[in-house]
Length: 471
Image 1 (cartoon, rainbow, N blue to C red):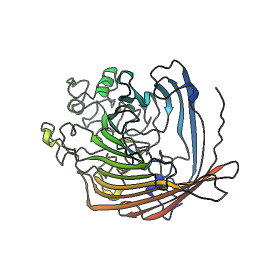
Image 2: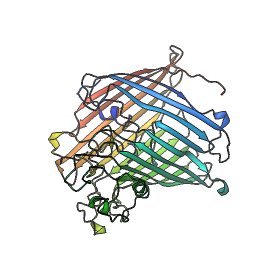
Image 3: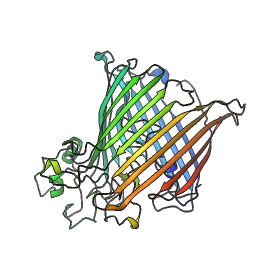
Image 4: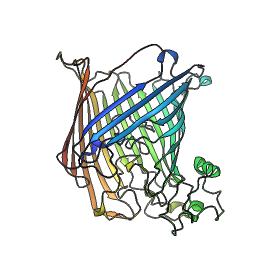
């Protein structure tokens, strides 16, 4: 529930699209999962002949009287089957995931794929965890994925597809004092059909965007120079790329300080080539996390992040001038007008939100009216000891505090910057009731000129039934 009609920012953001934007709501969530048999596999083995299988399904039912058109009463955020052999995993369906070298719990979320939207249905082959390469004696480890997904069947462009891949390396063994990380993730929305851009020169006369096997090659490699056939491609695709490309190039370093572990990371943003010329190098997600090597510490994690998306290579876009290939217009696209979103939820950082409404006077066809932002963010997490017999363990808590300075877009800047503060506190208590349940209580607040001012709360009771047996 909330004191305003909007659910506060940190109660709905990075929740995989299952929390409605309008309050209040009663939600029922039920799931069943079968994971791999840990006795048959060792994480990071290159040589392992046995197959193993797993699955998961999760259903969310929301009762909300003030639903927006894209909010649905019954959701299926997870439904997948997976198979593993050795270091390789293949899964089909939709599953909760995050990509990028960022903190997984207290962060604002990775720039390109944060867990803010409903998971996209796809088929994915991956090395899901950092796995040492044998001949390097553990000094070099690899993690990566390659996926093909399916987006909306309807919308501004219907039957669009997703190409996604990632590749990350770790330099240094797990026991080493210093471990370095580096890699990238790459996402492309491509294919599909639309009748809404005919006559603009942005799509062929039949409204079908490129979707052949040759186009898939252009999508995978990000090719920009091979298309010269004006009968098969529009001038937009000849001078740009096939599909809407975006992602981040990430760097990280981890330091073992004996009692603590220090993790530093940086995500560099790319969309249309500005990063290649380093003209948008000021943009990106920067993070520092200090973790106490004690899972029951009162303060276990302290996180600081700074997100900047205001540069975008500058206010000018001149395709023939590398120094002025700016105005990247993050998460917006001229062909795929629904932007970098799934079911009208931002797939990437929640601080680049869907358009706020007519009051912003955003141009027709843009997904977001606010992609030039500064964000300062702090997170805390730890455990609080308790001696009450009603509790079966310590209380776990999280705190998130975010301040954003919002400028709108280069095309339509806000008349004056909009400042926003969002706060969140969550406590989880394991109780000796009904064979063990978890009581969760959260409170969040918004204050500023971007969202409605208000305070909201979330209270839940969760029961897990765990059936352990030998496969």
